[in-house]
Length: 84
Image 1: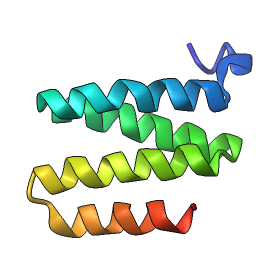
Image 2 (image 1 turned 120 degrees about the horizontal axis):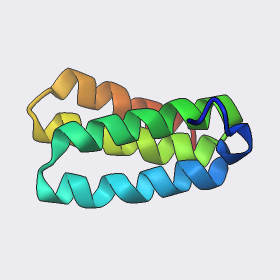
Image 3 (image 1 turned 180 degrees about the horizontal axis):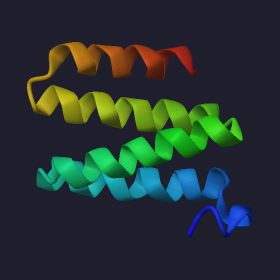
Image 4 (image 1 turned 180 degrees about the vertical axis):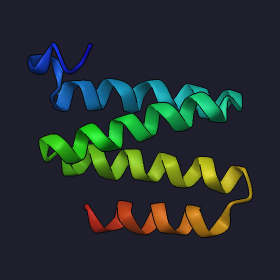
């Protein structure tokens, strides 16, 4: 769908995806939160949204941390800081 609707792929979409991830993380729905945050990160990279990428990377770090995947969490947190 996003491939067909290129005008929808922008910073607003990244922000919306990042907003969706937060409640899923809080509920412990890490699989869905991971997919949402990964999509937000990919789109943010594509459109050059450094703030959105930082937010998505931070969420990815939180997800990995809560699943005791420390190395992946640190990697994501570092990426988040690099984008600021």
